[in-house]
Image 1: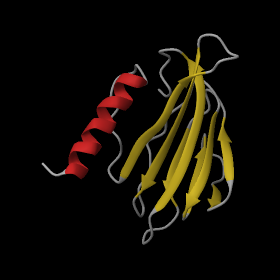
Image 2: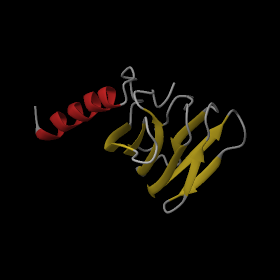
Image 3: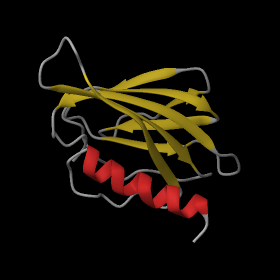
Image 4: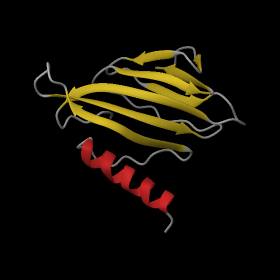
Length: 132
């Protein structure tokens, strides 16, 4: 097994443990790596989570919800977000958006030929699942 495969496996296991949630299968073409998980000093019982998602051309998440607000910054490419069947919004590199709690977004790479990359951030209770 090469180093890249080992890092991917460790990242997947770490995310499952760190998030204290079941290991949800990531959609094909979506690779999410947690880059930070820390206690929030001025918010007892809360943790901040930050990750980078690399999204293959045309890849998308399944419809899902979050128990707390999630902030996303598009680093490369462009992504489309559809919330509860409403019109799709497109965000380009350098733009950010939020996904509010208990609203069901679908998130996808807007391109079928270029990869996209996004940085996500969320504050949740200790051991609280980050998505359902």
